[in-house]
Amino acid sequence: MEDVLKIKEPDDTLDVVGESCPVPEMMASKKLKKMKIGQILEVLTDHQPAVDVTLPSLCKNLGYPYMILKDGDLFRFRILKVR
View 1 (cartoon, rainbow, N blue to C red):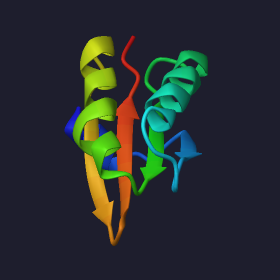
View 2: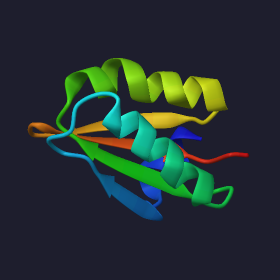
View 3: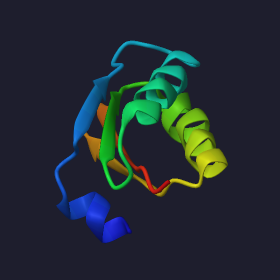
View 4: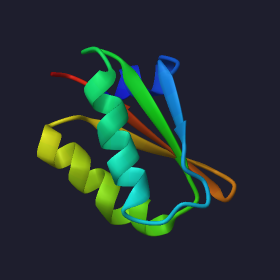
């Protein structure tokens, strides 16, 4: 699964730079509901707690694999919708 998250381009991108919790998690959840199985959502954020706590928690609750790519001060949090 991690290979897919690394290699495949995201199907959709959610830019929540400058937003703090719980905004990144809520917006990612809404966006994921509209996406199809097998698609990747990339969440762009600069909010460390979203990367450390809320987005991983969302993924674990939904059973979605994820991966975090650091790009300077920006995090690219990739989520694979598997069901």
